[in-house]
Every structure is written in C-alpha cells, then in structure tokens.
Length: 149
Image (spheres, one colour):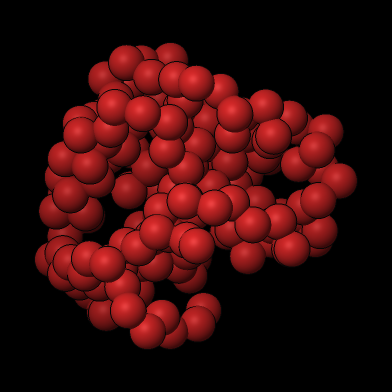
C-alpha cells in the first residue's frame, strides 16, 4: 500500500466498534451516489467499515459480509449498496465488465464499496472516496479518507 501525501481526513480508532461507528456516521450522511475504494491489508477492517456504511444506509450490518466468492453482493436500504471484493481476481477489467460495474457506478441511487481497488488495474473512478485503513497493532486503526482526482 502506498503512502498518500495529503489525505483529506484522518481518523484513529481504538476498536472495531469505533471503526463501525465512524463509517455509520458517514453512511448516514450519504445523500447521493458514492463510490468507496477500501484499501488495507487482510484483517485491517475493510469489512467492518463496509458494515458501518451499510448500517448508515438502513441496511442490517449482519447481512454485510465480504463477498469473496461471489465478487459482489447487493443490499437494499435507503440507497442500494453494491459491495465488491476483488481480492481473488488477477485482472479485474474483463470480470468487472461482466459484473456490470459500469452500470453500478452510473446507478442514480447507489453506493458502491470496492475492497482491494488496486485490482482495478488502469480503471480510474473519478470522485471516488479512497479509504486507506492501516492496522496500528491490537485494535488500533488509522483511517485516511480522500477523494480521487
């Protein structure tokens, strides 16, 4: 994972619950289509963050799990949520076309969460919110959020 020069916002959380609550607040504030690109090592807290966003969109967080074997899960709430996990794919370009990523990104009332966005290859999603989650040891996490160009 690369270090980023000027994050828009930086948080430090001290438990999975705090990470969830942070994301919940962000999810509650969403009123228009939004794309999140979730970066972080295995176990860093990407799915906890996704569960919080979902809860803020009035989706039961218990229904939100990493979609590792299906690549994408869809959830209905105040807005539709697409949760993609690209960990197990080598080159996402063809597979994402088949999954309908372009349609998801252009849906007028949808939030798209993409775990392992580095697998997107050359695909750039302007205006997406990048969320880099760093494991600081124990339950401590540093989250950096900024918009892509």
